[in-house]
Every structure is written in C-alpha cells, then in structure tokens.
Length: 215
Image (tube, rainbow, N blue to C red; front, side, top):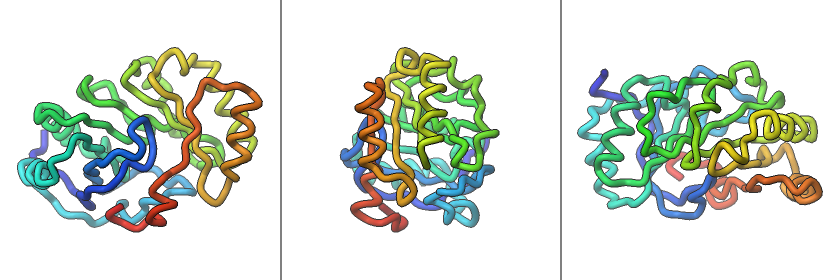
C-alpha cells in the first residue's frame, strides 16, 4: 500500500456538517474524485495537489493538537493509501471521520472510523454511482447523508430511508438542502410534517466562509 498520498490541503476549522458539526476539526482533503456531482463545492480538489508521505501528513495534523480529524476529498477512497492514513490517525488517538461519496467500497475502512456515506440523489446527477452494498456494512458509529435538490429528491430519500431501514442501521441519517437549490426552511417543514427519524442539517461552513478553500 502506498506510503504517499496526493493532498489538496490540510487545515484547521469548524466541522460544517455531520454529527460533530461546530467542533474544531482538522481536515485532510485528498485530491481526486471519479464523480461529478452537479452541486460539488470542492471541484478544486479534482486535480493537482501535492504528493506527501504519510509521516508528513501525520506531522501536519498533529501540529494542530486536534481532538477530531476528518478525511475528505474529492473522494478520499479513490487513493488506496487512504486506508493506511485512516488507521494511523486512529492509532494516534484522534476521533476520525471519513467523508465518502458512497460510490467506493467502505469494507476495508478501519472500524474505529465514523464513515459518513453519501447516498447520491437523482438531483445530484450521479445517482447511478451509489454502491448500495455499503449499507449493510454500516453501524451505529456511521452516518448516511442525503444532499437534497428538490421535492423529488426528498421523496426519493424518504423511500431509501424506509427501503434500507437506515434509521435503525446507522447512528445518524442526515438530510441537507443543496445550498442555493432547495430552501432550508422548506426542507425543515417537510421533515417535521412527516416526522422523519433524520437529522436536518445546514452546511455551517457555507454560511461562515462561503466555500473558501481552507475552511
């Protein structure tokens, strides 16, 4: 397994979404992604980056003295060496999460990692890339996220919630409005009206830093 990874950025910020929203977190953003979701907010990570030895990555992370570390992308699992990075971050004592598109097999991810797995909706333009076999691998420490673009996406997500028993399978099911596509209050009203067993979330970083790299 490779001892180097291509890295777009390593930075310290607040977690903008998921179970640990609002908590100071170090982000390790890997370069590259095989998907092209129409609402992607990290397209700058598709190419470029810097090849870094794992030891160098761990040193940069440790310099921030974090409690929480999030490995993200792009699609981090597109680089096989990501698995080794995740294991070493857990060994270092951090609480580690992985943000993944749901198109890559998560079976080899260290069980100490909280896997935040997207299910791509029809509105994402990448619904055909969902690897549904991942769902059976998830447990209470993991999270499933839906980014919703419209009412049709919401209805599709409700169906998947029931079809796979997601609320019983994972620790958190997250429903987020696609920024500037779906009104946040409208989504909140739908969730309340249907009494869904999901967590409504906004992407905090978009409101604080407007998708600037390094935040």
